[in-house]
Length: 137
Image 1 (tube, one colour):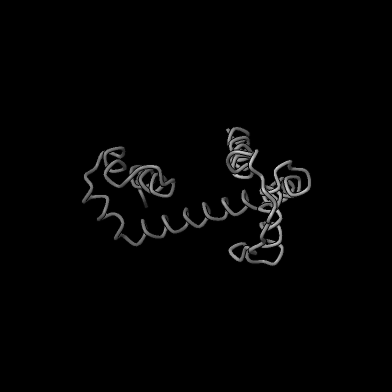
Image 2 (cartoon, helix red, strand yellow):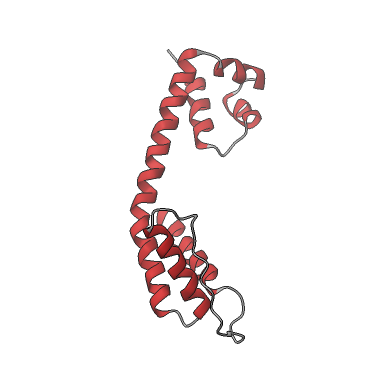
């Protein structure tokens, strides 16, 4: 049976915000003790179990956000006033619909867009991500 300190250490490890030295300090043990716990079968199994559930939770969250992501890209590709943003959004949409987001097409746009500074798509994507983060809080 895992005691309270071991369970807390496992939770902190899975959370991933603290390093092992900080976790050891948080639960009131030395770092070598924490490493010794990690060698224990029961500790290791509980860590694997919690990590598995954390991964499932992240996948569900990403899946929920996927629809909004595509709607946002579609909106940008259809209505952005910046041609480069529209092209990049279209590239991403096409790549994802083909099932390989890393396979982004190289679409060339010969039109000049000197009056727009920066990458509007990146800015809009950052704003969208920031709004999603604030919704989660």
